[in-house]
Amino acid sequence: MRQLFVFGTVSPLNTRKSWGVVENFIYLFSGQRPTPERVAMFNTVMVLHADHEFNASTFTARVVASTQADYYSCLTAAVCALKGPLHGGANERVFKMLETIRDTGQDPVQYVKDQMASGHKIMGFGHRIYKNGDPRAVILREVARKIAHETDNDSYFVLQEQIKDYMFKATHLHPNVDYYTALIYHCFDLDKQTFTMMFAACRTAGWLAHIVEQQAEAA
Image (cartoon, rainbow, N blue to C red; front, side):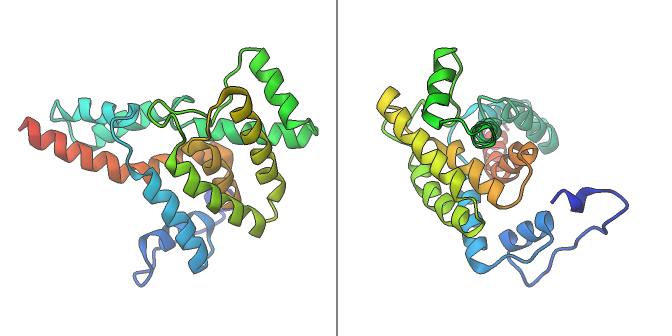
């Protein structure tokens, strides 16, 4: 992906009319036509991220939509809310944690213990609504397991499982949607700095639906 966005070195890619939305989307950010299995995996990610009730970014989009602002303004406001590390930016921080643990050779459980003792939040765990586990994370865990194995990233998945087990034992918190999404994005060869943007791309369909509904109610 990094190579595709170096201006002046690579020509822009064009969509293929005979391909589906997700197939084209992966092709445009990777430069490679994905396998049907990879398309199914990323389609699952996009569907699970498309909408989730009145989260911070969706609520922001609806507030702006209530003023009858145009779609671009509503979406811009939503993206600004999503950018925060406690919302859409959480997946990036999850992967930074995994990288740090693997690259430094630290014991994952001890790392988490030290972070918690220092008052730091362990990203990717807990949810205000899903007290007994995020159902989206259950689905994404299997996607992460499969694609991690296919892309020689098993070590990251093993770390995630060790951290997951300890976090439940120590705090009774379950992984949320951001936890396994971070690894999935990495396995699709995305730079961690693009994770939040990818979340925004997936969530745009849901934002637009809320915007249309809000403006119709306010008309």
